[in-house]
Image (tube, rainbow, N blue to C red; front, top):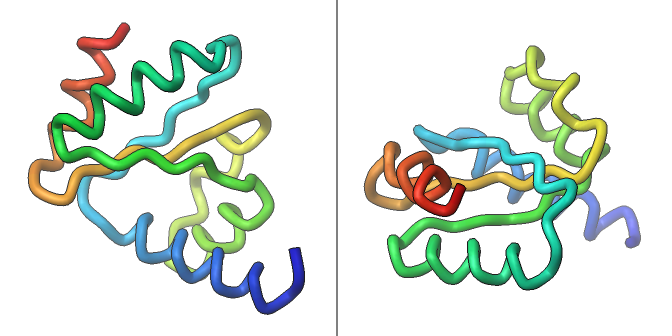
Length: 97
């Protein structure tokens, strides 16, 4: 990934982290079928999920003024958020579990 693309991705992450009701989800141990099923159920509820690149996510958090979450980026992590209801991501993830 070139430098310009990294800058663009960090900006995208900042816009995600500034939304109300953003949840970080560690998906280690989930297989592709499970992740696909989760994504489908989230989409039905108008909830978005994006797999994050840890280093770029840490940069984005710093730019957004959020520094207490760095420790969560040690393995595979995704951000889950809703465009309408800040509780919907948590509700949908609990249904999936």
